[in-house]
Image (cartoon, rainbow, N blue to C red; front, side):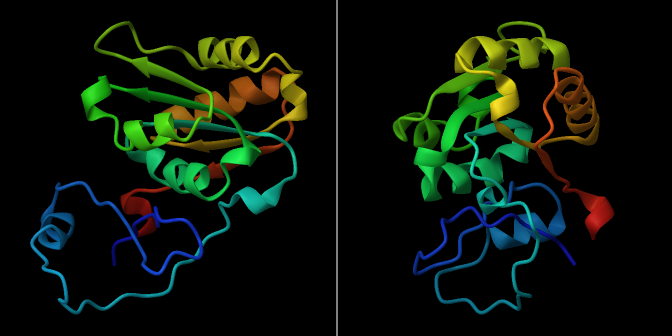
Length: 172
């Protein structure tokens, strides 16, 4: 089985996921036509903004932006900041949707500057927020090394409300 993040906001009359055209299954999804029937299992997981009432800081890298798109679409008023690391503006999925949401953003492009360290990202978050970062809830999604180092840096900075979404072939 393959797992894909639901990127549509709750309550929409459709279920949207956005697989990248890489690999057999994801590639085959791109060949489907409107009306084609596919077998699905129900969505599952606990990575939701309902986990907290604190201002949310969404931190992602690469395709880890997919749940963040849904969060911004569903509850922009709960999101204090979106931080994302990607190769370039043109490779950042949902860049326009996130930018148009009115939520404060901090995008970092490795084609323009070296990849920021986890400590640098935490410092950037502190500068962008203007409030005590301990007052926020953090939602992190991206490659394992990115997630692990960022969670460590957040905890070192005193953050206690940190939520992580794991994805990849280990879930299949």
